[in-house]
Image (cartoon, rainbow, N blue to C red; front, side, top):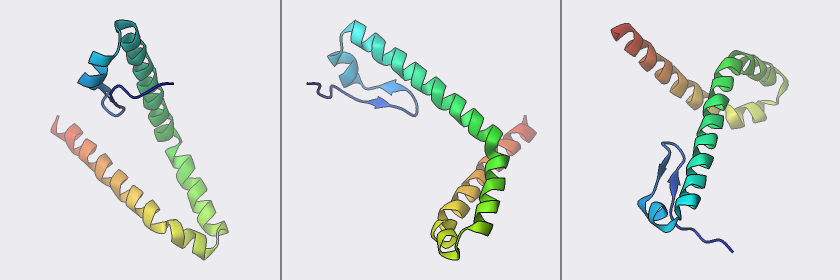
Length: 100
């Protein structure tokens, strides 16, 4: 049976000191290798999501035409919130690019 020995921050890739101290060098190497693979997969997924975004938006537009008003209404807040977040992120990166 396994038991937790520490934690890993999946966003920034840091392994907790507790985990570092609790794992053997071989186990720690395995965790590092797994974390690198996971981060690479996540990075590639984000890249693919960005490349497919316009298709996804087109599909969402079609869905809003086909779905019931209740279905669209149930998801409207989440969709609009995500689009607003995207708008801010793109604007911030564009501002950085213009300043460079």
